[in-house]
Image (tube, one colour):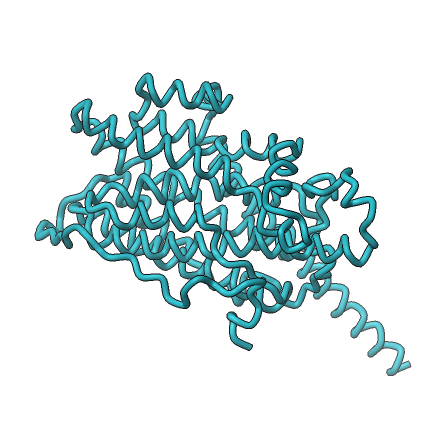
Length: 370
């Protein structure tokens, strides 16, 4: 079945073309590189994995409750609309919200793949090219996995959110080589990591938990790469150039905070756009979610050296300035540990099952001999 048959509404255009700008840069120095970036490149090679093998795709998913997260997280929960819904309607709403969330994850991962490939082309340093090549493979794997989950387990997709598409377009159209880092590694992937983490930590279903935990393990490396490359580069920029990057960050943060709320889902349930926006604006869960969205972005922005008065004022307005003091390294190490612990638990359970199977076979053989 074609993906286009599964969309809730058809994409505006089957192929989105973003005009490329900027230069492709070659480096002829093959024996020079920053030790920490080369170490990250080595880790990127060592940590490659196959989504067909590492993820247990035999796990069943109930389309009426794909994530098992509390219904309180749904925007309509507690409203008159919710009271009028049958249990079948509520199951359909859960399915649509999961489809919308994971569809945006999927579209974002394709964007990350394209941006990582653009970084390989445009970044001047060979060590950064090496690492970006491994990231391009990571993002391809993530897009593959989210696409498979939506096709095989949910059976429904949503088109890319207009504002996510707008930020992707702005990131890719900019001719400056550092902008794919800033737009993708810091903003889009920072927001995605927070969203992934919220679902990973609240879902009661093993398949989406595996998917999110393993993707986040990769993303921890990607954010570390962006921080290293941009921190070094931004130390060389003047005040005017730094202000331009800060303006880009401010606009992107407001755009994602105010527009990524799933209004499209409510419209598919017969709720007008303005009412859908009002319900989203007053949802306690979405208010918390908006703040948590910046838990990965604000400390990263501060770390790379974009921390001027106008940017700080914007973060005060959003109520997230204090997140600048968060320990980003601790968050990333926790992401890696959660994925590794999940592997240990799964393999221990599989080994226990194998041992039990062997013991049962031996017992049956003994009884037959007797």
